[in-house]
Length: 435
Ligand code: HEM
Image (cartoon, rainbow, N blue to C red; front, side, top):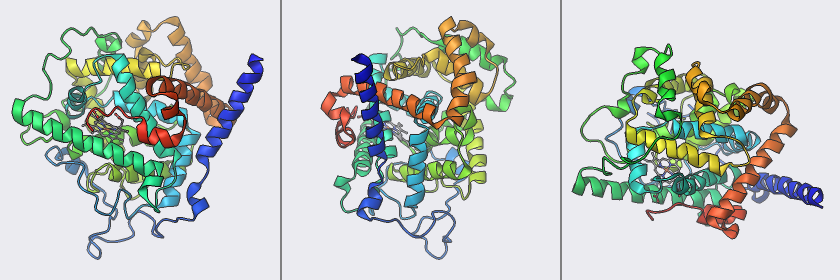
């Protein structure tokens, strides 16, 4: 009986996933622009049209005084979108859902920039793993809506789950940025500097993580405080720098570290995923000059992401204050609860991040892992990851397991009706303290 019902559940799941993949855009006949998105128009001839913006690292370094979230008078979808390419990027994200989720977890955990961390502390929901679960479940759920719904275009934004979701996230960002600016004007500090004074770090962020980093051969230039941490005047909450670095946290790792994430994709697929994130970045208020996914080709894109990684991501690992470590600790624990069928414990994730992404040996963190965590890590490295790269059926099964876990966790946190259909998820699954 049990076997039968789990087989039929699995079947339903496959049908569900397949339905999510259905190409609605083709069904209703909405097309994108004919122009490929990159390098087709020179700025001098049509300045209003987005071109190969190719923002530079210097632009990004100096963007802490520039507001994000500007108005988008022509809608959330940029004129330069290449819809088939963006849809291909979505398909890629769904094919490698588990790897992509892992990359997002790495990305969010490794982005402890003060302008992001303190805004999250200010907006609440990050005091305990239980609180943080709801916030991150909402975030991952909406990001998955952006991978699932292909309806980028008219007839009206209200029938498009992706556009409704993006508009809502944008409105949350605008509201929280305004509240933060207000708080800073009246109080000077976004949060009480002792916000986590009674918090005990529970993961390897309590010490071993930094012992491995310090013992590595990472050069001094990548250990100094990154531009995100320099004491400069005129920093605004929710600025273009932190927005673009967060965009990098979502888009950058699959482009730079696909194999380490178990992704066996063509350059075309990676480029498509990157284009999707260029579009999402635009929709979320990142201007083209700072949009870190708008390089002219994959080779330059990789080069630019590598520079961001070495200028911001690696250095921030050496320069987190206690509050930011506490936030990371809580966030890692929250992620584990969200994907509970998969044994992704915080220390396992932090270990794999050091080994696969920062690419240093991490013997001290390894020594703190339980036998089970070591087994999972070995299984990930020597069996799961290679199979993920070579066996689409295995991938589908693991992705399905992940999705089942998310539906269970999401239904518990947000209610069955709100979680089970994409329509509801795009409209109701939000942390939404600032609305
Ligand atoms: C491309 C970059 C970004 C993406 C993809 C993104 C994604 C999201 C998503 C999906 C949500 C909705 C989930 C929820 O209800 O909490 C959200 C909310 C939120 N985001 Fe972002 N975000 C980005 C940048 C940022 C940055 C840079 C900050 C901080 C400086 C930030 C802070 C927040 C906060 C505080 C909320 C919750 C609002 C509330 O308290 O009601 N986000 N974000």
